Image 1 (cartoon, rainbow, N blue to C red):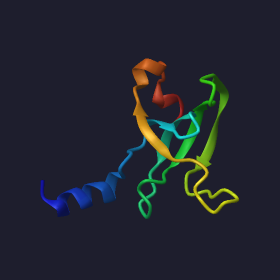
Image 2: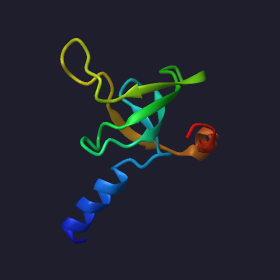
Image 3: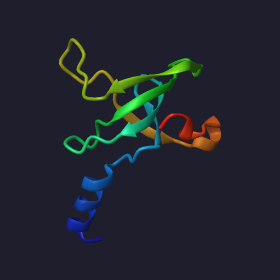
Image 4: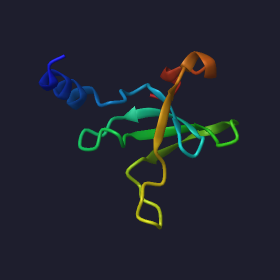
Length: 94
């Protein structure tokens, strides 16, 4: 794969395209709803599940560029999650 093609692809879609389900290092599950073209690993997400695995009544919008009191990001993406396993219709959230 040509590195420039890859770079352009990521620039357009982001590493995590809108609609991707991800697990955060807080154990929350979130839906990517807006890529961050300047910082592809830090998109805007909607939290759908709390750290205990319970589905939230309403999604909570979070910006993954948000820093904690220690100056480090409050949340980080650790993996993607199957929408089928979580029985999520992404059209409800985008």
